[in-house]
Amino acid sequence: QVQLVESGGGSVQAGGSLRLSCVVSGYYFSNNYMGWFRQAPGKEREGVAGISIGVGTTYYADSMKGRFTISQDVAKSTVYLQMNSLKPEDTAMYYCAAAYNPFISSLVNIAQPHTMKYWGQGTQVTVSS
Image 1: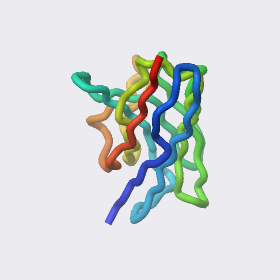
Image 2: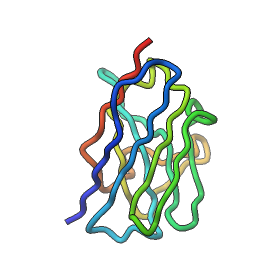
Image 3: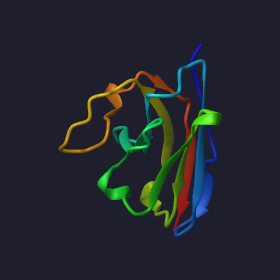
Image 4: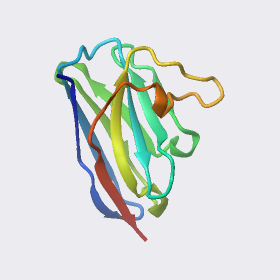
């Protein structure tokens, strides 16, 4: 049974930082794409960052570049999202997801939610002003 378990969310003030973790089990971690997505109330789910496991190629949504960093620990089957300089508009439920070789459009340069196969339950991030 494939399981993705996120942790690390919480409440912070604007300008603060959080580090999210996603532990994967029951799934061949290597050679897959792992992504972080978020969904705010009333908005569509959007890609935040992604990484090709093993190879280490990273992908970011334009608005997250320079503030968010995705990384991997293959030995621990874990993907991290370091979020710095958080803004109130970063408030959302954050999800990690996995897929094998999803299509990544050169226009957005990040995998889209509908291309992901497995999802975690999410972790809430709230940023206050």
